[in-house]
Structures are given as structure tokens and as C-alpha cells.
Length: 200
Image (tube, rainbow, N blue to C red):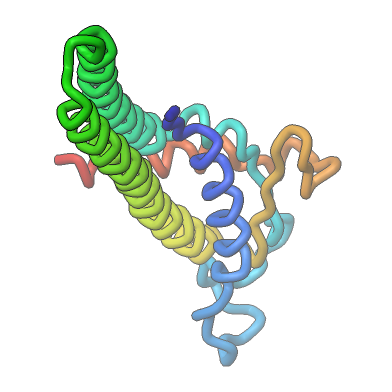
């Protein structure tokens, strides 16, 4: 039973960013005049569509690093607990096999039934432990999703962007973008600054 978080993290990040692209323009009032000086309005030479590198966010966002550590620690603890229980049952089985020749038929039958019950209980425990780790992953993914969508939506409003795209190696949404439209560093900094405030 192996519990890992990085693949899950990357997939939920992709979903979160995709949803945030849709959400970033939802609450914008429609009755603002075109010449408005607010950030939501287009200004001369200011782009309305930008992009960032998703791989950089995954590798540099401190919340994801801490989340991976939490999930890894929980996964290792569950793995260790399950492993120690499994070893205890294996020791009992070995002890039974050692003593079986000297036991009566009734003693052997009772011991085998008891060991069978323990084996079934262990399998159920193992399944429950795996389910608990998966549940922790889902809860962490939900928190990450909410953080990403809220940040991207607010970031778009603050900077007057109508669309924020993302790309990652092997699955590019953006095949090419002028470097002046790349907001990756600013997004990573903004996410980490917000997370640092949350931790205080």
C-alpha cells in the first residue's frame, strides 16, 4: 500500500486552474463605460489575456509543498501502522505453524478460525486506512482548488485581465505566448505572499 500526493496535486491544480479561467470574469459589472479608468477596463497597450506556467506553480507554491509534506506524513504513518499489524499476524501464523504438530485437532481448528478472522479484520483495516488517506487527499485537493480559483479570480480583477491561460509540459493550452504576457513569477509570488499571511 503506497500513498503518494504529487500526481494528485498536479491533477487538482490543473482542474483548479481550468475552473478559475472560467471564474475570473464572472462578477464583473457590465455597465462600466469603455473609457473607464478602473483596472477592469482595457488601457492602451495593456493585454487582457495572459498566461502562466503551471509546472512552475506546482514546484514553487509553498502551500503545495506543505500540503505534499502533510499528505506524505499521513501516508507513511498509515503505511507503518498497516505494516506493523501485518507483521503481528504473520508472527502468529508462524507460531501456529510451528506448534501445529503438537496441537490437538480441536486446538488447530480453533486457532485456524481465529487466524482467519484476524486476516479478514486486517484486510478491512487496510482498506479503511487507504480510504482515510484518500479522504485526506480529497480534502486537501478541495482546499487547494478553492485557493487557486479565488486567487486567480481576484488577480484577474485586480490587473484587468479578461482571460488567464495556463500551460504545462506535455499538455500545453498555450503553444506560444509573447514573454511580456507571462505572469508566472507574479502569480507564484502572489500565491506565496497570500499563503504566508494565512500561516500567521
